[in-house]
Image (cartoon, rainbow over the protein chains, first blue to last red):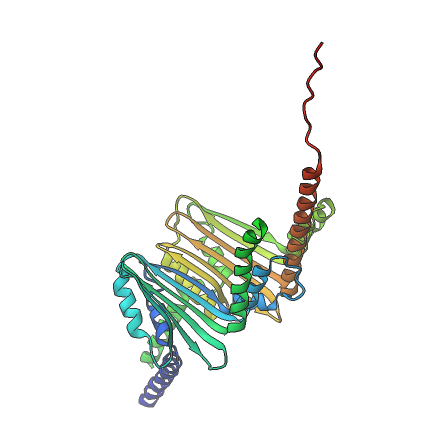
Length: 180
Length: 192
């Protein structure tokens, strides 16, 4: 009976340790997201890789899309593996500081930082593989009234991003050309 | 021995506490106060879709009906003005179906309102789709079994885009035609 007890406890510990091993690979931002996903103070949006992969399974090349912007957005979205958005209107500054402290500066590189007179901070951070491919794009906004965390995970091709920006720029320019 | 039985009993009790499948969730809640329930067998959707296709001319509607005919079963629960199903029950159910092969497609939460869309696929076909909308006053549960392929969705999107493009072209043809028409000028009657 004693041997059976020890065997059972050993099995339980094996299961618990393997589950723990899986969770240690989760990044700090993932943990931050998981911590607040059930918090009623936050508005949460999570779009999984499954739904984004469906865009990849759609026959985009043969789609007769007249709208070049939509096509560019879908091409970019099909390479994403997940989108997470957290928004809070209470204690915005506190959440912003907490999120910033969780970011591992060895993993993330600051792309841009903006700080305005109203003490609103905007940070763009990326995690890349060094080959024009961004693995994660993180946007942090911390102001008096609002905290926003947006995380785009996947293979974000900078060429596709600039193609999308060009499509939006072309649309903005065409009204001026029509006037001329 | 008693220790082992007690542990086993604890595990079985915890597993019985919340529904593990969409069918169990449907049967658990369908007779609760304020809950409207509805179940449609696949053969009815298949037959209805087939009959409707003969009467419908719009290509988008036809494509939608072709897709609807691949639905095998549909279960639906809804409440209005009163929600007897708690957020904890919904979260437990979502956790249970995730461990049964369902994966999150989309989750949106704002305050006490949540929207979950989960799916289970097999061999490139969308086998199950679950939509859960939970609020303090409203609740919607939709469970769909199907054999819809991603190519079918692609075909539907393509048909919708094609018909939108055709409508745009028709509108553009009509506008220059109106612009080219000479304006009607009222002629004055000659003086006597």
